[in-house]
Length: 232
Image (cartoon, rainbow, N blue to C red):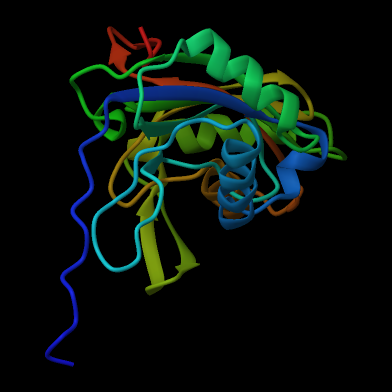
């Protein structure tokens, strides 16, 4: 025990890149943990020169921010990579897209800004599809929810049952048609998810379908009510 060597101290990353990627088709059913494993395999296969953490069990420097729920599709997921060498962002994107599994596509790569990725992701745009909703039910439930000062729902989390004030997170909510909602939601602590909004709507009217199909269209900094690009 006394001869155990201290862990090797790794050099800091030579470059930090931030990626925007999409979860489409079969990718929507992949858990965040499974995507993490797929990304690490893709980075190795693409021969991206990753920087590693210090310690007895070094791991590649990969940081995720505000991943969407399993079963949600998305056009705006983000991850930050720490690289051991400076690389051309466009070449990193091309190399990863050649080896990532079906359902995942890197859409943009950029040098990291000084602000933390988590701080830049302040709000999201979502499409919530509720097939089978009777005509007029969603519009009526949405009106009632927006008229409320607050509306609390509960959801089981890893740390137990938690309460969420759905109303305070909603920046805008409207009906695209009788079965589809458009939601712009502020990222709060604890985070209100679009399925929490559906739970609230079902609390108002139980004819609202219980199995939504979720698609995130954008997430980023919030300026004057609009969502910006966190990579630029």
